[in-house]
Length: 321
Ligand SMILES: [Zn+2]
Image (cartoon, rainbow, N blue to C red; front, side):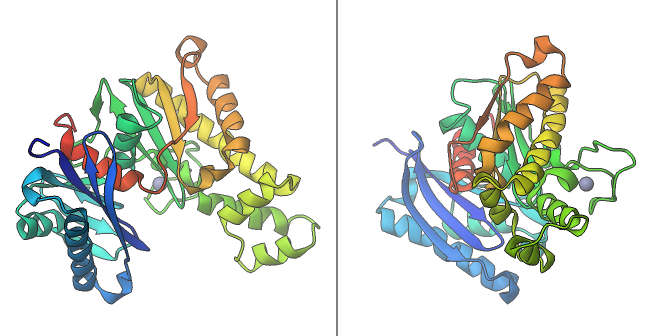
């Protein structure tokens, strides 16, 4: 095989670090997962990132001369040019030059991506966005984010932070958001929002039973709420559908801004896609000019938990990214 047919992808998450060696066709050749243990501090986490990177190289048997670079996907605020994680609350990091550290250690160019942007690249190259030039990937998990591919290029913005879809305001007078704005989409449509909505709704009804007790104790996660909804609980189904309704309002805004061919929805909360996608489509189409909305496909993601790793590696292959 010719030189530089591989790239390393790293996904820095609050609970796990995932490293993978990926080839140009999107095959994951080797992977290594380590717990993050962010509470042990920045140095310890960086050591584990380096160790996971080293492991995928050594277990794959691929010579580092055949690797064209390392892509790193991180949540939070990043600077893709300097390779710095400026602020990531899930890692407890401020101004960590992780790109430079990895680049120096392995003698390879390293690039940093916002995690939603990395997942968008993976879906565009090898998943639900294959064959399109205009695709938007929306992740719905603890928060809401997006990665935008427009005219075949990732829209990364000035420093790699474009696509903060969760913080577009859908109600100017809505509740304050952690970002400083009011009425942000993720306050209505994220996993956290679903948990809050369940708590508020139960507080104002007489519904009893195990679910009520769990919700009141804060022990019913969005995942369990959507599982209950999928299993046929109408009380929880209504909450999950409501989140879909709000995501559709956001999606209408995306249509006006980017004229996409497809909008891909992924992230943990979309395990209830059977309930959410029809709601998303309905409110999206109700709120956008039919000529623009009719041809837009709304689908679920095809690449699962490895999307961050795959996309970070894919971003290294593609000069457009
Ligand atoms: Zn916000």
